Length: 420
Image (cartoon, rainbow, N blue to C red; front, side, top):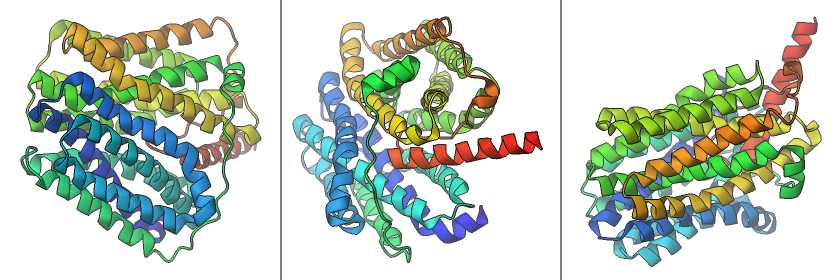
């Protein structure tokens, strides 16, 4: 790991600053929207804009990189992000915010693809797995750190919009000045949704549902917190708990999934998430109960996302895994885009409890569908499964491809050791 940090620290530092800026803007908009009197329904459109832009960017940015190169795309999209972060405060209007969130989602998608290309190219075959693990950890740490910075100034003012803009601008300095040359880039053709469904109905349906869960709880958490009357500190702690839970629980859940039918793990996690959300609805806990619930739901959503990708790839040859993963991310993007708006509609009908009811409904559907699929198809032998790869929903298809490749290589190595 020390070798990875020594060779890749400019990229890792830049990515962490980018994630701090990204994490701040999402939480800040949810709180500022309540201050500006913007309704929950309109704020859901604002929050959905990011996921729509991210999905669009995943489709269009690879072609942009091939036409004009990594450096130009990286610098152009970085400048756009920095400008939008300042303009949020200058134009507190929900339509303007939705368009800016669309632009910033598109830009971050491109920035992630470019940064991950550099990360992949700067690593050797021996260090690539550790490099991508460090990359995923840095992403989570940046998002958690962002929630701390949200408390440093008044959300009704300008300073909290200036801070992420400056951090994002600074993030590009270590990356663009890195001695690593711009890597070669090849576009990846996603597997069609129809082919994905034939390969793994659970992978396809599950990714749609878990995309809705993640976008609903992360995208709408600040809006829900502000509507419920939580303080800025409580809202930021709630959002941070989502990512802390996802980071901490990935590893033990991944270890368990490599040793049994992954569908059992997916079903169990979905049931646990449903029970946690139901407990929140029935008990109406205080802030500490809410923080625990956020950590547990985040600890469900993040690993299930990675588990569904791993489970689908268990039925595919290595040559098709990258295309399948890209296709699953595309399906996940559609679920993410609708999540905030459905959550807002339920909140308008059922009150603030609609936020939790939405997540309970999707998690229970996932549990029921995964359980039903276990009656329709035999699980692949445990010894034929690939190794679990730690993944973040913020990662692009390139990072997912590299992480899965390293996990597959680790699985082969483990089998060779066992055979010896």
